[in-house]
Image (cartoon, rainbow, N blue to C red):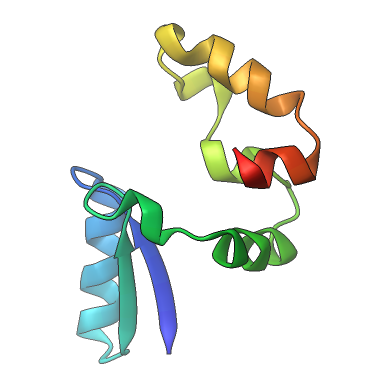
Length: 87
């Protein structure tokens, strides 16, 4: 079974769910808008093991980050992997 991580108001997430439904693919959905604490350390480690970009793949691109939160992105980038997973 496929697990997808979604958030409310994301057109990309809506498109992914529709594509999976249209292709009769079973999936588990973790909606981080409704269940932010369901995204466990083990799930994050599994995601990172599949990612080439490392932590930056989890928090998005700087260009799209609201300027109010640029400081947070910079802080996360400076964390060690162990610290970031405990964040």
